[in-house]
Image (spheres, helix red, strand yellow):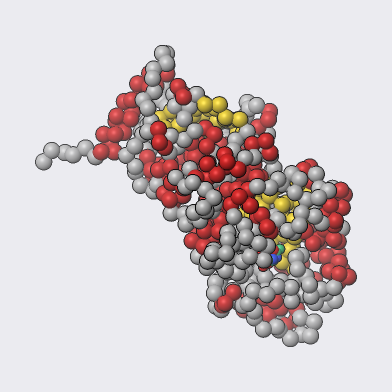
Length: 537
Ligand code: IFG
C-alpha cells in the first residue's frame, strides 16, 4: 500500500517551498509574492482596536511555514511567556511546531519578540510590529506591549487561525508596519458573579475573548444581595449560606470561588496581561452577608435570602462595631489574595443608608483599603464622601453629568467610564433581545461605539479619565453563550474607545472591521449577536 502523504504535509511543503522562494527572493530581488486568497487576506488596518499608525507593504507579505521559529530575547522570562502564548494560539490551526527559542536563527523565518529600542511613543503598553518576507518583528518596552502586539498579529492572520485543528491553507501575514499604543491606560470588562455565578472555566474563556481586544482589567462583582462568591476564612458562613445551593437570581447559579480558584484565576488573567479587580459591594447590596450572619443586622436577626432582582433595600448596620470588624476582615483577606493594585468597595445604590450614615461608613472603611496596601475603586457615589485622591470613581450615570464626580476630578481623582446607556452589556440590544435588562434604554452596537470617553462627563477633562469599562450584570444570564451574546459585538466597541485615537473614531470603518471579525468568532464558537447594523462576513 503506497504510503499516503497527508495533504497538510504536502501543502506545508509547498508552502515552505514557496515561502522559501519568497524568502530567497526576499534576500535579494523583489520577486512577486504568490497571491494569498484575496477574499480573506487581512489588511493591516483591519485590526480592532484600530492601531495608531499602519503602513501596508504588499510586497512584504510573510508566510508562516513549518520552519518558522518564535524568537524571544534571551534573559526575559516575561517575553518568553508571551512567545509561548503566541505559539499556543498558532499551533492548533497551522499544525506547525513553531518552537520558541532565544537563539538567533537569522537564516530561518521567525516571529521575533523584542524588548527595548522602540519609538518613544510606544510607552509601556504600546508596540511596533514589522512584517517583511523574512519574518515578523514585534518590539515593545514591556511584556504587556509585546502581548498587545501579539493580539494584533493574530488578527492579521486569516480567520481560520482561530480553529482548534490544522487547516490546510497558506498563512499569510500582510506586509508592512504598525506603530501602536493606547489612548487610555485602563480598558476594563466587568463580570457579575453574584446574581449568577459563572464557573472558573467560563471566566477563563471570557478572559481569552477580551484579551484579544487588548482589554487589560477584569472587575469581578463578587458579592451582592443574592450571593456571596468569594471564600473568606474568618467568616465561613458567607459562602456556606450565601454561596451554596439556591443562591443567585431565581435560585439559579449557586457557587463561589475558593481561594485556590481565585488565585488560579488571577494567575490565568495575568498570563493574558489582565489584572483582576475584586468588588465587595457595600454598604448596600449586602443582603447575602446579612442572611449569612445575624449579627450583621441591626436587630440581630438574619434576613431571609433574596433571589429577586430588586436593588437598594439592604444596608449594613452602620452603628454596630461588628460591621467594621467584618469589613476589615474581608478587606484584609481579599487584599492578601489579590495581586492587583485595586479593591472595588462598591458604594452604589445605598438607598437604605442615610447620607450621614453612608459618609460615616465610608470614612471608617476607606482607610482600611490603604491599610492593606490597595487603592480604592468604587462606583461614582463614593465621590460624594471626599475619598483620597488616589481613589478611582466608576461613572455609571446615564446623563453624562455628576457634580460630585466633577469636583472630585478637580481635586485630582480619576474616573473610569461605564455609562449604563453606552457601556452596560446587560442592556438589551433592542426590544426583541431575549435576555438582558432595559432600564438604561436599548444599547445597539452603534450606541456602544458612538461616544467619546474624553468628553463624556460634563466638566471632566480627558486628563481626568483613566479609561473605560464594560460591565456585564448577570440577573438574566445563565451560560457562557449568554455572556458572549451580550458582550459581542459591543465589548470590542468599548475596547476600541479605550485604545484607539479619537481621530480614528469612525462608525463606518468600525462596522466594516467588526463585520470582518465574524468568521473569527465563528471559528471560536463565540455566540455573538448578529446586529442588523453590521454587514457580517
Ligand atoms: N444597577 C446596579 C447593579 C445592577 C445593574 C443592572 C450598578 C452600579 C443596575 N448598580 O449598576 O447592581 O443591578 O443593570
